[in-house]
Length: 418
Image: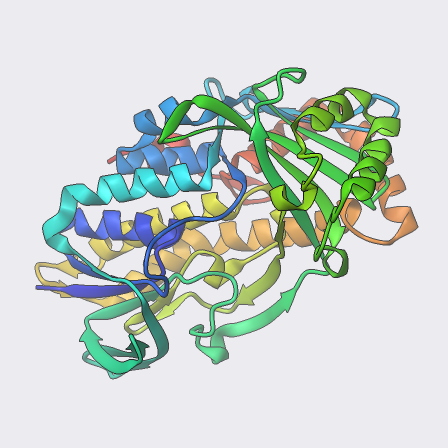
């Protein structure tokens, strides 16, 4: 029986385990931590990601805990809506879903429980290297201070943006972004539209976001919001260390967006403001290929990027969907032709990944940079762009995660079909 190893139990790894276990493949999941406890702010699942959720059979459960998001609005200090993009323009009935990372992980693990006989967990296992031996692939690592190695039919690397397991020859670019974000999760903001991802911009140096985040499984009645504040990575450590910093920051926000400042003043801890904030740092990873022979790389390990277009989790889910489709395509009985698998996988994911990485790299400096002209260019260009129906629709399709190129896109139904 075919046995595949997946390194990393994040979004890409868990979703891939589901699609492959569904095909009767034995899966071993290696994870470096001893217990899964996802840390992270809320994220926005775009229609593309929700199509994969439908494919996996977890969409209905996700809707009970997530927060339906109908669009994105980006406001300038003068109240002008610079960004006003709604999913309905990309297609009838489309929407996004704000969801807590812990909830996302819970839903995928809950689905994996349906395939218990096919799933083998290896927690607290650190993988140090992979060797593709032609007829098998071996992983080498340590657990509880002891070295181990094991052989598999194939190995899928899905251990995140800072992965050291990417084959070096495949990596074209791997560098950190100079900007990141401080974030916190707080009770839902009732003074803003609870079906909108709200963003706030002032030039390219100030950017804040408020995302409806739904609830976590053990507190389904407590609705949450995620707050993001953009910062250079050099300023992330120790953000808002005391009451004085809290007051100064709120004053900044109040001068520009008083409604938001009034809400934040109520939900940010007065005595220990720094305790609520965590930092997020990002990388830009570009690879020439994502799989060869019996080794593949997916998720952020394969194509980490700025979160400007909100596509990280969606691309990870699409990777899992595409890998499931490709394994089925290259499989005959118990035999898998891995050259066919990767040819098919690159056809499904290559152009889409290139499009979103290119767009992210193009747009990020307009929102997060020290260039004085970037914010001015953005404000002028976007004000004009949203007046053109065709461009407004194309922006909505881009945000939905369904684009495969400037003039092409995938269809929701194509992905959602089980």
